[in-house]
Amino acid sequence: MVPSLSPSGWRWLAVCLIAAAGLGTVQAQQLDVVYVPTPKETVDRMLALTAVGRDDFVIDLGSGDGRIAIAAGKLGARALGVDLDPNRIREANANAQAAGVTDRVTFRQQNLFDTDLSQASVLTMYLLPSLNLKLRPRILALRPGTRVASHDFSMGDWKADIHETTNWRIHFWIVPARVAGTWQLRSGDRQFAVTIEQTFQEIRGSATVDGSQVPLRDAKLRGGEIEFSVDIAGRPISFRGTVSGDKIQGKAAGGDWTATRS
Image 1: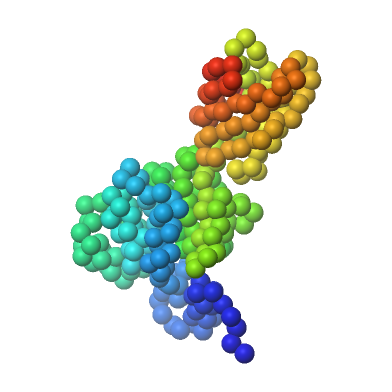
Image 2 (image 1 turned 135 degrees about the horizontal axis):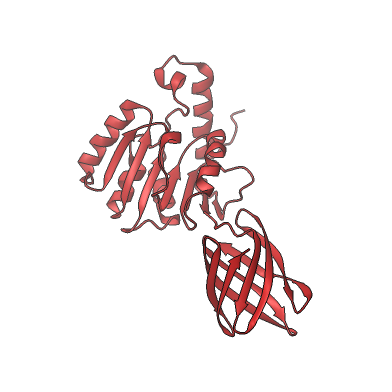
């Protein structure tokens, strides 16, 4: 019986069969990922999820024939495609020339682990799960708010903010700010400590108010934007703010508030 697989499942099976068969190509022997093109509809959806626009710099890891970087360039973004295979780089450059986006899109033959990712506002990839996991610490160190889309494969226990499996399989994350620790929060004439625990973008914690410890309610972190509620004098007060390193600034019901990590 022929197994029932999704289109992405068949593509992944093809990758496995090529690698297992050892077809003797330089690519199969020396490259980390056997080239399998991402379908156009998946490319379009990845760029839609990451909301690519004119102000973005997109880095596509394992860029193949350049289709993701070129599509980003057509949206007005600047883009860099990185691939180890010189044949793919030549093909990508030719495709960029034909698409008229060479003023915004470049390709580099380079190991993705040697690539500076720090300028990316959007990161896209179609790699193997093991490579995603090796890249994960570097991705988490990027600027909070950096958008990341992976075709087919996840990043282990870092849960995706969005996971779509209809007609394609895409994982989407927003790089979270690092907020774990104890913060001294000041709002008006009130000051108290807030302790936050963090697992990727999931946060929880407590506040010590007037000598009593109360849990943070409805705590959320999206990129560098944080929000939570604290029960003060019997009523919940909502705090929303923007994280910048060891400082947070924002708005609450009583006006502006700030917090400094101690």
